[in-house]
Image (cartoon, rainbow, N blue to C red; front, side, top):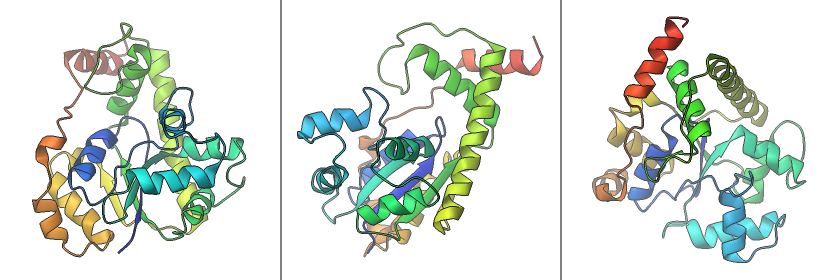
Length: 242
């Protein structure tokens, strides 16, 4: 059985929904953004909560294994290519090609299970990204901190950024010599969530993949789509060049 799972993705691809589905099995880790080193994000919350010195990667990994692994020892991590750049900037992994492999090796698992999650409709992804950044509302829980405002140039910039982020992931995985175990697409995943979980369970070589998925706690994941009429209006406005 394999004990390290990376969900390699970009913002607004349904990764929080996938994370909730994975967590609900209680056998495939809890793939949060454990290496998001943006101010106030998951990494800093965790080191403060766990009493770990910032920059001590080995201590942090040990804590991840102890505190976030499921009972069978599987650790799950949702990771953006940006997080790898942050690790390099902190001097925690070497600069250059193969950064994800370098991180996996620090876990003692040079051949982790790799899942990629992308979104075909890049315009919808970009608008979701723009709105989340403006409002500060990244999930279905909580309230927006600010009102969002349509701005074509911002959406265009976010669209290009998301495409480049995805391209950087392709280059990163190639540099590492990793071939993803699964390539998931948001638009398909929305209708095949149970099948995706089963494929992940097989990739992890769990002893009873079918039983693991069948026994999952469906109530553990109540995330809903965030798209609404405002999103549809922005899409229509963008397409019409208004």
